[in-house]
Image (cartoon, helix red, strand yellow):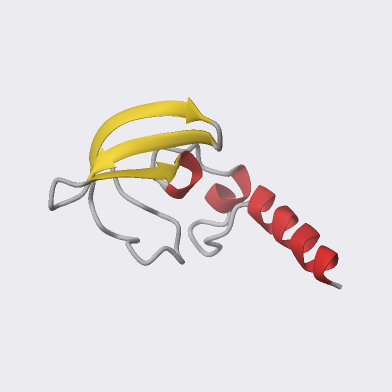
Length: 80
């Protein structure tokens, strides 16, 4: 399993998959890092999440998912 969220400091590292589960914060993946430490990540930050149709059609030229961009607009609007 790998992290695909482009802004996460551990992006590009490989993790050993342990379990996918639903927690209080949503769908998460539990994994072991290279040192054997247990980690958890939102499933959207991993390669286990379904590929957004827009990102797939963009042929890798757009690293963002449509839903994430819509949420970003909402956050920025809320700051004004």
